[in-house]
Image (cartoon, rainbow, N blue to C red):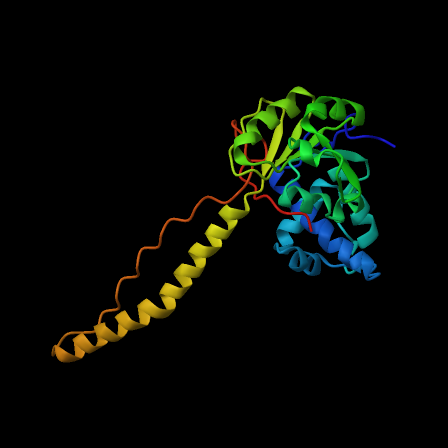
Amino acid sequence: MATGRTHRPATRSRGIPEATVARLPLYLRALTALSERSVPTVSSEELAAAAGVNSAKLRKDFSYLGSYGTRGVGYDVEYLVYQISRELGLTQDWPVVIVGIGNLGAALANYGGFASRGFRVAALIDADPAMTGKPVAGIAVQHTDELEKIITDNGVSIGVIATPAGAAQQVCDRLVAAGVTSILNFAPTVLSVPDGVDVRKVDLSIELQILAFHEQRKAGEETVAPDEATSAQAAAQDTPGTAAVAPAPLAPHRAAPAAGTDNGRQGPDGDVPAVMPA
């Protein structure tokens, strides 16, 4: 079986935009659900709605893959699943190491969707000697002293960091030095990496803070605005010849930036939002 170390996806060499690459997993998820229901074909409008994009953007994205569908019939579901999987490199075996087997790392290790999507958890690594040898998701945890050997022996090119923030950069440096060229970072910190290394950041706290901002704004629109409108109308009625003027809206707080690519050089993925696997 081919490994991630010897085969790389061809998306960049073929000139597929990074924004399109970021949407391909959304299409694949929607197509996989259709495949599981034995749906043979799907229209661009139906698939776009399922993926949460507009149909014109979907058709443009698929044109980069050389897939245009059939007028009046739509797209062949099984062929698109294969085509997108191949483009994303999911027809290969991608060995992955997870470093940091706390609550989050253990949850990631137990996630059942990796194998079905072309990713094999090759090793679980932790700095705590008490964790060494303990089975998590059927895999014995190994100590960080073995990190470089584990990466070399398993041909790992993708690393997942789920350590505390203070340890993340050191772990990142060791992964890169050992040959890892892609990192998924769950630690709440910014990582600095050299050219040629891709970093995707998943910061759950930032996403929750953004949702909290929107909830606060919605609550303010529901409670503050009606009270101000009532007061303005009453004042206008008390002053002859004065028209009621709607109150100026409150200035919203500035939202925190959405989570996206996280590396010191702002990698090739730009500000594409990171997504959890589904």
